[in-house]
Length: 196
Image 1 (cartoon, rainbow, N blue to C red):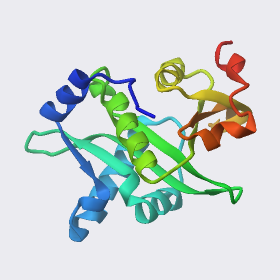
Image 2: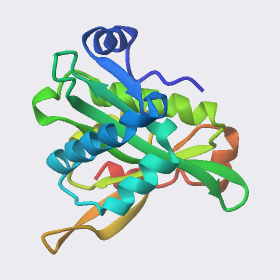
Image 3: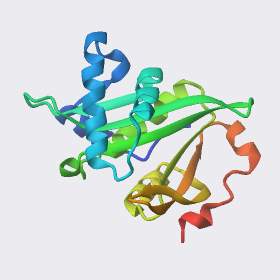
Image 4: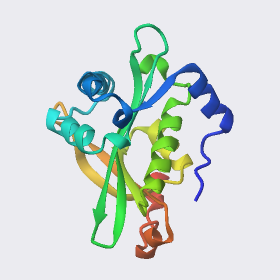
């Protein structure tokens, strides 16, 4: 499978203008500071709150699935990141999971989100994952459109999944098959939910 939802020119633009890094490759003595900056970016730009334990779980156990983009200015500010994990699913296949994707609001529209999805999906393929899942708010049309371009389809709908200010928001679970093994269970039958 090849990931083609982003053009070579868009990849070049991101890599020329910004510094793309992986948390696992950062020197050990800088990983705590980088992790803190990633957490700050997520907290300031995502509507759904996360416990510090969620961040620790992802960043400590799956640092190879944490890509971040730094501004090339003196500040080296982290302006975008994607965080994931992978594990065995139902003892028969490996499943990747995208936990968080964030681009600083003032930097949106430069294909950084698309670039980071491309990056992590290629890593999931390298890790021999059979499929990848994620959740996103049902009303987040820009995220749904972006993931659909990569081939994600709707698997489930969760009522009141995100509990912002005690007013729940519904979410879709999206799935992308990476190997033939992923499609054997009929999980690609719920596309009509995305098209509502």
